[in-house]
Image (tube, helix red, strand yellow):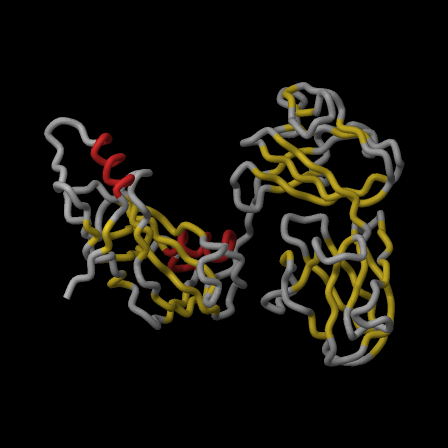
Length: 347
């Protein structure tokens, strides 16, 4: 038996107004009949992706969403880590048909680069459909399918913005002083160290002054050719720039290690020291095996890093890091790349 969900009267009116002459309008009440259902891949399928399959086809198929009226529906295929309730869903692709024709390479890029799954390691994900008719009609979601996927490692070249300033000689061509757009969405982030309290910088595209951004008025808005962005304290800064909204932020971050594997437990941080030569934060200390650590900024939890997959890469608010065995360790926190990483080296 079909189950019908009644749409609101407001939605009905808006939809009616949006219909032009000759379009079918279903009468006084709109119904939502069947939701779409993914038919392939099947629930619990196992997908092992390899580089030599990169150009092979990857197809997702599904049944139609039924609205009780003729509708031009766009179907968006989304994926997320299992158990995450699609809180950080990424788009695999979209289609106006009942299938998505893609390739293994494109799927692998979404899983490895955007979703952040580890290469050559099996991970559990969920996939679903989002059916969209118009902004006036509520989105319709399919039941999810559970998949176990193994992506392959690829070398990802992330978009970069140069960050020249007085801290590096205003060298616009320096590709080590940059911020990255990990999702290739024109939103950039990175950590840079300013040794002097009177640091100044700007953002440049394509490592050229031809297109550069400053902040005239120091109001958080990026202005083409604007004034230098000025700091008032030395240290490592988290820089964010959004070229869609033309906004930016900067925040001083003093990093430390905390956890029951450290001498001070979860009560206080042990501060790390910046190594300007290797561009990393580091400390050598005794750790207790089997216990855990995390990295956090400014002796507080709003900005903290953990390791969700125990693979050496870090995520904001990620899982606690388990120390393998007791001993004296050199601990490195590396924030100079697009993906933040760490190392635990037993001395």
